[in-house]
Image (cartoon, rainbow, N blue to C red; front, top):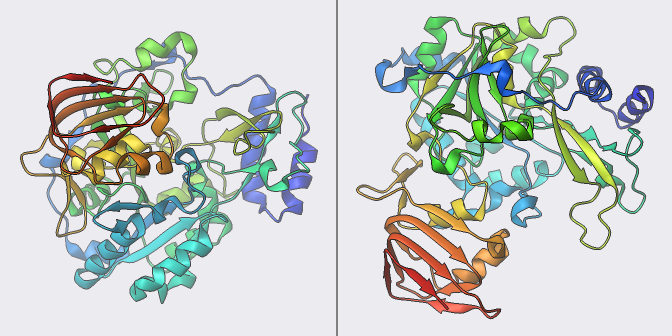
Length: 458
């Protein structure tokens, strides 16, 4: 049974614009029809060949005057135990994500005429605006440097009605996924304004991906090829097998994106087969603004595949998280199947240095990575790219901080590190090769010295 009218009234009361409301109701209609957003293996086939970044040539720098750099900055990082904008987290050498982004933009603007923007959420806007006062070149243009992410109502699983939670009304709402970018551009009026002001291209990336910087080769390929979208992809490795992958839609022959939440349980093995599905989406996207506007049409809506996430009403509450709900989301990269004629480019891993977990944060803070002169994160010269696997004792940043009070161990010669149980690393600890550290007790133990190709048990 559908309660679309109730959802529409709730969203309109909150002041959400018609284009977003209409797009979200399309997703809700799919859910009511039994669509869980699954993309079965039988409906797709692997992508085997793509152009590579190292085969492209740089474009004329004049294109930069028609280009926007846009960072997605709506996340709080609640999954890592944070309660402010995730981009305020210190990541390297005393720099937060926002520091590194700010320094990248200042450096870029000193060389090229380029426009910079954030997409913030109601949870991150104020903190981000205040922080960016450190970088006047961004702060002074704030009025035209921000678009706001929408918010979506949660669906009560038992009734399919709008979720209600009097104890914490804000818990009735959730982010709509980064696929909301397209609706946010429309409802803010920014898409029309950018096109009217002569901007033709936009480079979009997540604020937690410190490898995502302007590349004149990709920009030139986007413009010369007339593509509506170019997606940057990397070759999947063991550490990437659970993330979304690129595929080809058998029905249309076009490219499509399958996220983990869209994989039926019976296809999990095929989904994680990195020899079959070889490419994953970095969420670095390049868009032709005019073609995007055309694709969204008079309605200002871009139809995207449904992603259904099952959650509790207030997952931040351990005592009373409330009833089960559906959160209806879309993925920004999924527009590759809606924007006909789009393509993808294989890029090296130095363009993909995200922080989604404490595992990744731990690695980036180590000497295995360096912050380059152009303020990008890169694997240190001669270093390994370590695979780090912590157990649930380190899901939250405060828990990780307890383990590294005296410093992050050296990982430049580490291939793989597994940690189970509570530990703290002594100053000067060095990890080499493949190492497992296992503490079977309940008290935190100290790890020190050199550990090389071994299993250390306590």
